Image 1 (cartoon, rainbow, N blue to C red):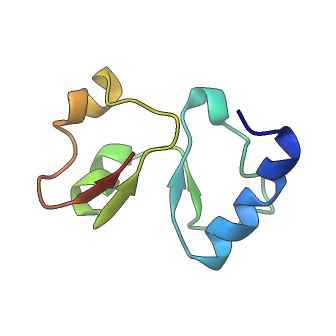
Image 2 (image 1 turned 120 degrees about the horizontal axis):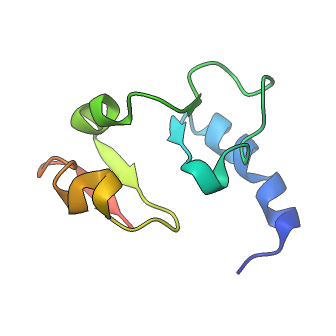
Length: 81
């Protein structure tokens, strides 16, 4: 488990790498609020985004029913867990 101060750098790193991000219910707000650049922090249409993703990084999340036990992730997509 990382200390909370390490999470302060996460939004900046995701923004600098232009990584669109979805947070589940327990992580909601982790990336900040209205100051987060548009197109970076999403809450809806995860299913559509997964279909088009080249790379999916799962951090602290398992492929449970929300991700159809991995079936929601296209076979050709690179998955990092």
